Amino acid sequence: MSSSLIQATLTAGEHLREAIETEDFEYAATLAAARGVLVDRLLTETTPAMHTAAEKEALLAQHRTLTALFSTHEESIRGMLATFSQQRQAHASYHSSPARPSILRQVHG
Image (cartoon, rainbow, N blue to C red; front, side, top):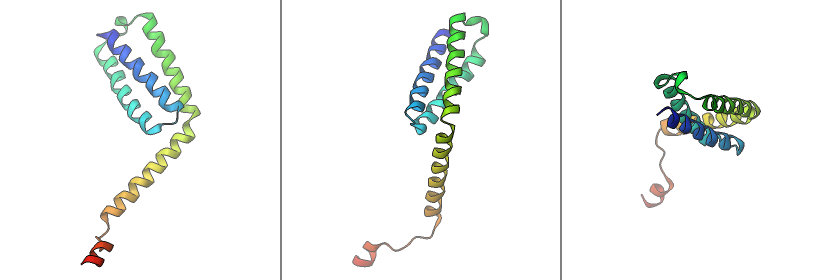
C-alpha cells in the first residue's frame, strides 16, 4: 500500500510540474490540492520505516523541484489568482444586482 501511495503522489507531482511549466495554473491548483491529499495520507497512513531509501529520495527530489518551480513562477501565479479573484467578484456582483429588463423582453414584450 505504501509503494502505491508513493507512486500516486509522485505521479500527481509530475503532472503538477508539467502544469506549472506550461503555466496552466488553474489545473496546477487542482493538482496541488489532489497531491496534498495524497501527502496527507502518506503522513497519516504510513511510517517512515515503510518507505525505501529510493522512495524517500524521490519524494524529496520532487519536493525540491516543485518548490523551485513555485518560486520561479510565483509572480505569474499571483497574477492568475488576482485575475481569478476579480472574475469571481465581478460574477458575484452581477448576480447580486437587481434584474434588468432584457432587450428581447423590450422588443417582444
